[in-house]
Length: 145
Image (cartoon, rainbow, N blue to C red; front, side, top):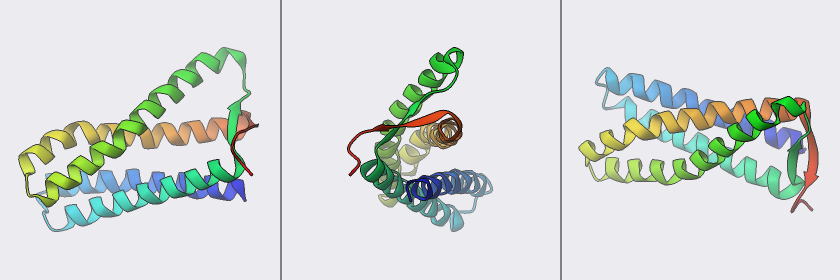
């Protein structure tokens, strides 16, 4: 069941990233009808990712890197950058949504230039981390029941 929750989380963050790219393409084409709809779908997918990720973490604990020693530094550098940017991404997205709903599009646009790359980085590195841990991970325990 833990693997299923992890796979669902990975699928949702991947779909979120795809939706972000589609949303960016739409706004660059001037589509002010579908852009906000697609970006709300991207946000919903990201929220579903968070739900499934936290369920997996809460029920089954964490996974420790147990791969080749020569990759350890690169893995942890990726993990730390991913974790820090993931923690920042949530508030940034909420700020974007707030400004879009308030029709403050200049602020929305300025923040989107930073948020979109962070969002995509977090989605892609999340997939990479998931793939690495599927191959080289071992249960580390944690708060799982």
